Amino acid sequence: MIEITECPLSPERVIAKVLSSDCGCVVTYIGLIRDCSEGKPVLSVEYRDPNEDAKNQLQKIADEAKQQWQISHMAISHRIGKLSVGEINLVIAVASAHRNEGFNACQYAVDQFKQRLPTMKKEIYQDVVIIRS
Image (tube, rainbow, N blue to C red; front, side, top):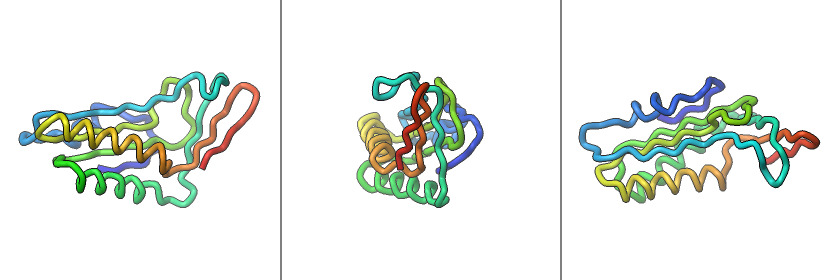
């Protein structure tokens, strides 16, 4: 399951999408909006998908992980819109027979998400706005 949504994310729902009786583990990453970035207090973060291509980019990341590690299932859910401090912006769940493959694939997906940020990110600080694309 690859999902771009404006709705609040439920880690339990994302995990449920990858559960399988042939898997010995599910590795999960939950990304949160933190209250400080680059030494500045964060008020909120806004993610947008202006080209409506984020879902395709996330699918590529999942496909690449499946080619590199023996994993059964991967789900990535990314929330767009305006998010407040403490809200979840990303959930990645990886099901595999063994933990090493699960951890490696999950780490890869998080790293690739950060490197290839599939959405436009606007950080709103108390005194300034920074836009990253």
